[in-house]
Length: 392
Image 1 (tube, rainbow, N blue to C red):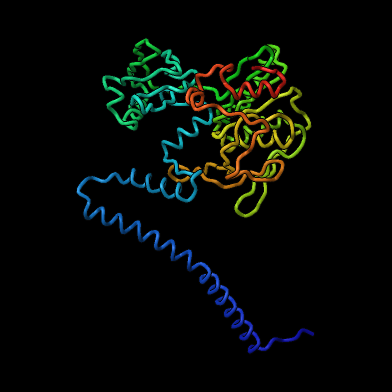
Image 2 (cartoon, one colour; image 1 turned 60 degrees about the horizontal axis):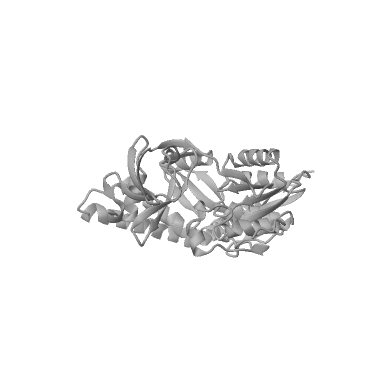
């Protein structure tokens, strides 16, 4: 026989349930109060500044530019490795990760003694390369304006003209005066450059890891092997990192079976990337320096931990955070969402990856980094010696 539940008991159970629900809601809201108050203060401050500008500013405000600057500053203050990308910057980043760039294709350095700009790098296939501009050229004039009479920012802005703009550059190449016309535009370039050095050593430089780097790296290695390369130098000096997928694919190509990298997010969740049993059989060294960042450091750390190659150069920068692009309704966040843990399990953020063989460039050689012949480059020489070449 079924027992009947008295109405008083039912009412009591309902009251208890309501009280417990209210208590749980109260505790949740209480725990959220500091966060809610902080957010309210944050929005109040923005509203106050914006209202003051609307009421008192004498000029015309560009609200879109102001919002971009606000978001950029906010994200950068949270994490120096992260940034906000507006829609134009997001499109440019996506394009560059596929090896497609826009601009003149040069990197310049300000010379304080003269007030001029020295070209320290020229991207292959770029408008500057097509105009026969070379590393080491000194920019004296941009158009009809003398560089020494401009600020660095003014000169850089002139070099960042819109696609289709023709820029006249007056250059000094040694004692020779030249004038070159550069048509700003889009170009496709590779992050991998390679050559044979010292007889049978294949030299491969990787400037960054983008979506095309792995394929270009394999082609470079295969081409050098066909040319008789018996040993290799992989140069990730000044490598700024980039695509984790690209780094992992190259490491998988080089290293035997095992864990390549473990990533941990802010909840402690782990993502593990591993390599298969196939590996690269030839002896090699890896060049690193203080401007080897992020994925470049992961590359070096994995080679070190597998004891697969010799690290030569200087301790790397020490950026152990992994970023990802998170699309927004307008633009995107380039945000640190995980931390890198190489095979040995020790994150290198703030510490860097140390070389097996320490070798430095003098200040004079560092200043001419992209102009150096390999026989002048003391770090390449140290790598050749590590491979048993005995080069003076």
